[in-house]
Image 1 (cartoon, rainbow, N blue to C red):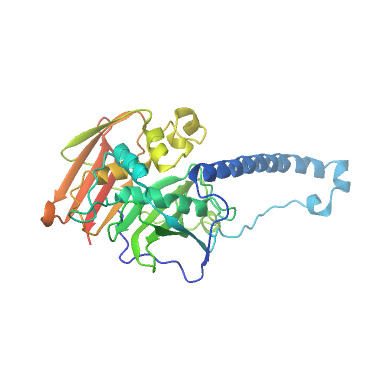
Image 2 (cartoon, rainbow, N blue to C red):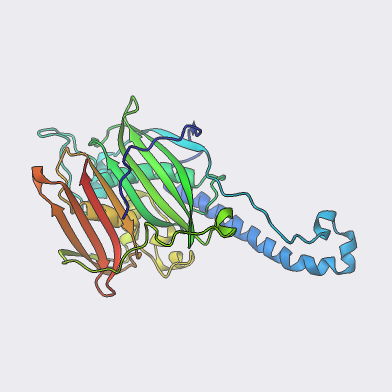
Length: 358
């Protein structure tokens, strides 16, 4: 199970603070990532063809007129270890506007409350703050010098610290960076970190998302580095708790969440677009599941809290999922909550959300 960061994350001291070049709108970022993926696929195909053709050319009369670099067979390839860009993207004046926030909460079934008793200002739902910050994180993940392919990356977990409530329409500064490249038996993991802060630098919200680039291995992993047998993402056999609710999720669930979050990753939009990226079909956004689960908990107003989510089997759309909510206390006596979401037919877990008071 993921646990919230014991302290608020900070930008590493050797990172450069920069404003992202170009748009930080998700559709544009995904289009850019798609163009690079297509270019990479073409380059890989050309490289594979060259690898097959060159040996025959070297053994033929043509071999005598090949450039020196191509006349020699390259029997080993020594690649540099993957590195994340040593930069943090900073975007000022981000805010949750009223109409957008209302639509977001409607999609994830979240209720709203005032920032203080009697106030006319509404508190931004914590899941919406993630959606607000996500484009800035994506602007880092889609940089040309970011070493992993963002399209098709699998969301493994999230840890979030909701330090203080934020009012709808309040202007904040978002800062995002990546760190902690790691090995995984299925590829390479990386953390994307985002903070939201008020003028003066006080952090009001911080999130850490861990992603897996399947099939992409770091140079260290390729050289045989061992991966721990027990990882934080491995689980004991699933024993379903008492079901307290169920969600009926239609085929358009991914498109509905994309419309309010801006996350138009093709794996969530339709079966054809998901299959093009190696999935069995369209799956629900992990943060849709997490936000909807968080909305079921008894977190009182004005209480700082931390929440984490571990993702297991993706939610294949359309489907019906089982849900269990366990609150430790209610109202002023609330201390924490745990929400499990699972497949009731196959008895397999989809996600576990843990919420604790700070």
